[in-house]
Image (cartoon, rainbow, N blue to C red):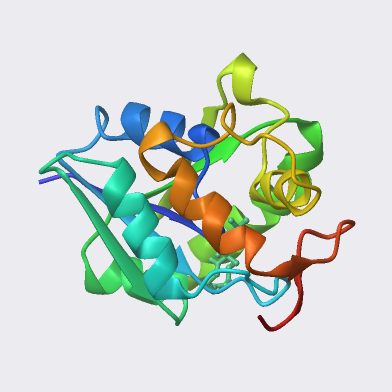
Length: 172
Ligand code: PNS
């Protein structure tokens, strides 16, 4: 069975992420969407909240949504996954993604990284942008799935964000 892992912060999941998920699941028998820790980001949603939002937006028996707070290379080994899936939006993503792909390969030589080009309509989209728009009371309905729009809006409106980074500024 071919197992792939799509890791990320998903803070929160966007239509861009869902586009990658729906395409990646066709490549593998089983796709694990892994909510992981990016030490460079301070998340606005808890891991449980992020999992819940993804599960509400994705309904496919071949897709599993999990959280893991260790090394991706270790988790892939544990789950016998053969590939990591990442979405590439622009050239600016490439250097960082390439560095991660090579590091993961070094840590787990059985593991390859498969890059999927983001669909053109989602090239601009990021979780930080969603949080920034929402923090100014803007409409995020074009950026997140309708099934979880209200939930995201309600949770974000209860919190305060740094408009530049999209990071959470204070506790609600
Ligand atoms: O959505 P993001 O924030 O770009 O995803 C980055 C993420 C979470 C996939 C990355 O930071 C990660 O793999 N974190 C787990 C810890 C780890 O394995 N770090 C080494 C990666 S080279």
